[in-house]
Image (cartoon, rainbow, N blue to C red; front, side, top):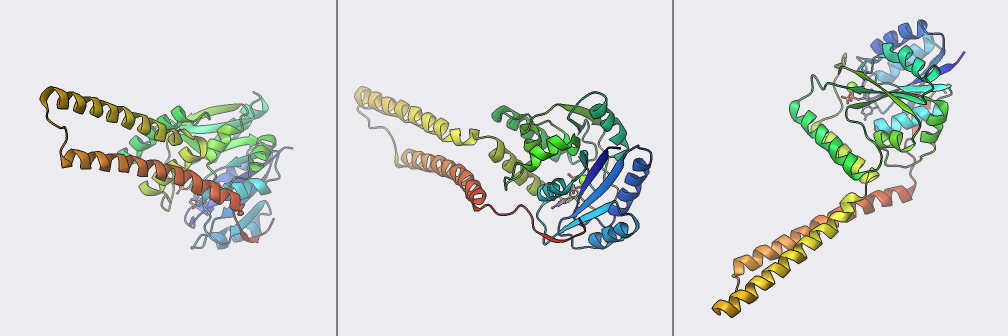
Length: 308
Ligand code: UDP
Ligand code: MG
């Protein structure tokens, strides 16, 4: 019998985690597989860990890994994957936005159709603020233009994969982790299942607009070096502009004997060029800071308590 490891990142999920467990167990009961449920407690400040430990006492398939602080969902996924012993690994949110009942269909695609992984994407963004959907769409358009990995719009992190693919992901020990990029980068054949967006059962989303915005910048920096080329483009444009102005002022001086330019034009040109230079330095700095963090080789997460 093949074993499936279910990885569940949990951050302040006291309202959802038990609901999730019940639903997951009822799906598991209908499948002909062994299971392990790895709950990764990502520094929750509520009773999440207590509840998970309680589940572990009743059900020996329940494993937990508890971090020393909040390291973020990416770190939680990495920890879960690193400790998963199943033939297949799936990750799901604790809030039932990733419906466990899709699992049998996902497994069929791997076992019968020969895919290495089955991923899910939501085709609607129902229940999401429109402005957030708008920026999300822009982000996917942009990143797919400037990066050579395929990042699918509306892709959830809900994904079942073979142990081989999981191992490839675990073997990418980068510190700045952007799962949507990593999954694309490692390759393998992926089947996409589509479903309508489902709102979380309980509790609140941990993402606000600002956090999502920063996360999208992470994604761009991690999977594209195109922003670095902006310096060339700005530089080139500003050289062209300068040349044009030079010719214009020459013509004016010779034709009308009237020297071109006032203090205001000069000042605005200075500010413009200065601004462009600062933007380019900022972009450079961003890449440098990411490189700096990678070279420190800090662990992605620190475990405080576990039963694995
Ligand atoms: N999560 C986590 N660490 C964090 C933030 C979130 O482990 O720092 C978990 C969270 O408990 C949930 C999943 O990641 O199981 C997705 O989070 P959420 O539902 O808040 O995101 P959304 O579904 O709204 O994108
Ligand atoms: Mg959610």
